Image (cartoon, rainbow over all chains, first blue to last red; front, side, top):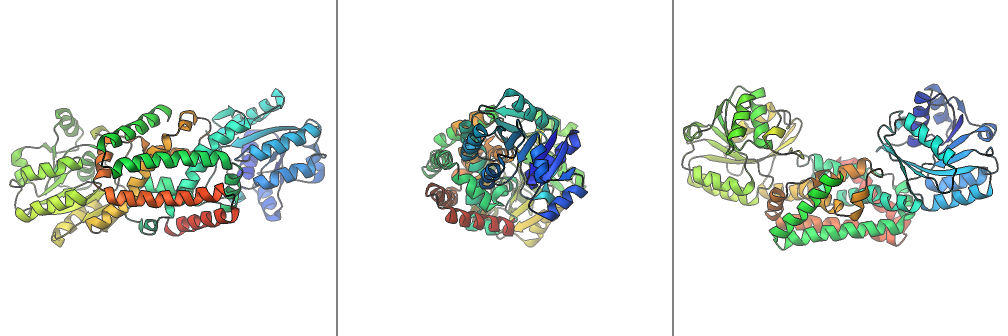
Amino acid sequence: MQIAIIGLGLIGGSLAKALKENTTHTVIGFDRDENTLHDAMSCGAIDRMGSTAALKNADLVYVCLYPKDVVKFVEENAARFKPGCIVTDVCGIKGEVFGALTDLAARHPFIYVGGHPMAGKERSGFEASEAGLFHNASYILVSGDAPQSAVDTLAELAQAMGFGMIQHCTAQKHDRMIAYTSQVPHVLACAYVMSPRCDDHRGFSAGSYRDVSRVAKINAELWADLFLSNRTELIDELSELQQNIERLRMAVADGDREQLVALLNIAKTKKETFG
Amino acid sequence: MQIAIIGLGLIGGSLAKALKENTTHTVIGFDRDENTLHDAMSCGAIDRMGSTAALKNADLVYVCLYPKDVVKFVEENAARFKPGCIVTDVCGIKGEVFGALTDLAARHPFIYVGGHPMAGKERSGFEASEAGLFHNASYILVSGDAPQSAVDTLAELAQAMGFGMIQHCTAQKHDRMIAYTSQVPHVLACAYVMSPRCDDHRGFSAGSYRDVSRVAKINAELWADLFLSNRTELIDELSELQQNIERLRMAVADGDREQLVALLNIAKTKKETFG
């Protein structure tokens, strides 16, 4: 296959490297930054730099841009894709992107399958990308009305790239789960480091500080968009969390040891049961 | 030195192993569980099992019991310690324990120095203990009126055991900082996994779920006591966190992208600045 990767940042760059390392497909890289394209060529992450002609011949296109740029890119190129070409994205939230690309695919002869590789890092850009980024990670596919063969193609490539699990679901389920598993921890990390105590934590902190605060090193523009495009689900999950913190806080404030032990044991059992 | 370790759980067992591996002092182990004592003997974590006579000859006593049992143990044995013996504890909260042991030391010829090795694990008991547990960890010493020589003795042993940093402070500062660096993350982890979404997280989660939820596998009885013995400081820090979550939640709810980006950038800068 001719595989086009649009945007060679952390995710796009890692997909390129993982595809080159684990498959024999031809990888064509697109990026607005010339230096990134040259870096990608010189380290062998891509076979060729992209061109309009190359895009027309691609069998599969991974659009690895920021959510707001994904729809724009596909809109502008919808008429150029080869008939039967599979177009997929890597957006952390599916809502708006999934609806818009599904509509475009219905009006053009390409196939759209939503995708979300559940991997990341605190650093971004091509220089942070690596072939092993997806090792044992989960790859979520939101296939909608796409033909099974297209879904299978993406799943097979994901397995070759080292993903540990392929998860299929609807866009709605995806966004509800991601609000909990990914967005809430990012909000939390940011809220946590806002305390004045953060400034003096050295010498008083260990693993639990490090783990909760890790993702506070956030890409603010990207995550603001991700949060706002999943507003309802995120607000719901944050309210759920706020209620549970309040239950624990009240038990402490009331000095109610029995209630506190009971609540902590509920949490312990859930963590042991669900991992 | 003759070093007595009272309680061979995760911390006491790890101290015993680290002392044996890195120093030439004699380590005498005390535990109410016979099997633990035999395990500790057979793996070389201790030189001898404890006895009343051995306690009387100890130059240094690490009391590694649950907070509520620490004061009781020292009260019952205060008259038995050798004059000039250094007694230290490993309690995660200093407040009550520090006050009670300081009072006992004032009325008996032993020296008390509060200690807190900032290391832990999700597992407990002697079988989870290891000589390397304290590698690069912080060791907090709350010396109060203790002579400098006793503080130096504990600091030198800590360095030999592999601790990466020795931090000196008052009991009050200790407890305020620990509320933030350790207790809030434990409350958070428990509140987080209480969401119904936790039950379905597999396939939708990655590093940020794993990191925030890690310490939800909590020792409920121990942490309930730690929380309640630091009630004021913990309540204050939880309120601070709740306010900051609410600021972020409101920015999302209002769709105020500018405010959201500004808040996320404050967090990012703090994490980058303070680590």
